[in-house]
Image (cartoon, helix red, strand yellow):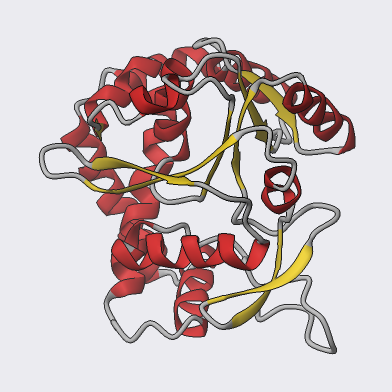
Length: 271
């Protein structure tokens, strides 16, 4: 059933997805629903002065929401949404495996399918869906381009770490609040509980370190960006990379996530 629905979405032209997304965004704004409220709260908390940014962001959120089934029905659809200049070619020339980190800017699966297609032996950490049938279908689709998925739990992290030690490639979207262990850092000068996996793994100096993210494209919706970092980094430095990427296209960032929770002190979250 889910696969049939995804296949139907995959044949929609991108402009039609935008029309439907615009209607969905208006619905979220008019009723002031949770994703819109959280988006406004996060944007204001981080000090962005653009009063229209929340509206722009929730429109991008709605588009992203529809892009997932569009890709799940046909993973090759990521090529219709993404501009790139074979940035991963330089990665393939290295004799060392890659540790890649990213954040939730635009549709993450556009990034993951592009990376899976260009980086062999790729390991991805993901949060399983609550509906097992749905999760099984999506997991199979995400692995269709030969990537290996590991759930974001203790068992999955052990499997990911084992693959890392075996010299395989790893990509992690690490801008969300960790499920378990993490460290306190700052994003846009605001305290946040952050994933410290990149700090721990990069210190081993066994992999080349790369930061990848999406911005607006000229002819297609997204442009792929890759930055190579020639040293280990701390979690504070990782968040600075995130700040720079977000500042290039703030409306593309996933502000609808509850980023500022599990805080220290009396106030545990801003929501």
